Amino acid sequence: NLTLPYVNAVIHDSRSQELDQAWSACMKEEEGIEIASPALATIDTSLEPHQMAVADAQCREQVNYEEKTREILNSYLTTFLSEKEGLIDQLTEAKKTAEQNAPEILAN
Image (cartoon, rainbow, N blue to C red; front, side, top):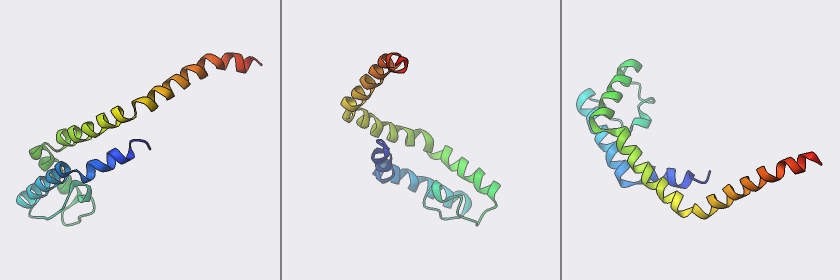
């Protein structure tokens, strides 16, 4: 759950919104349907499911959706790692200590 605020921030990032708009424009141009984002494509029933899947995939490819989404997410997760570095180090050290102490504790 530590990363949840960062992942949620991606959704509200202007770059993500612009990417959704580009995808939406492609869907309108190619299929004549208005859908705000790929997340809503499965809800829309104006196309047969197979046809919707093909149109979705084609528009994702056209706007480079996955790569750009991954870049945005990585920028937030890099920030997460930087901000939580101390906590991550503490957890790593606690795990090492627990592993070292486990045989002695279990032996008693």
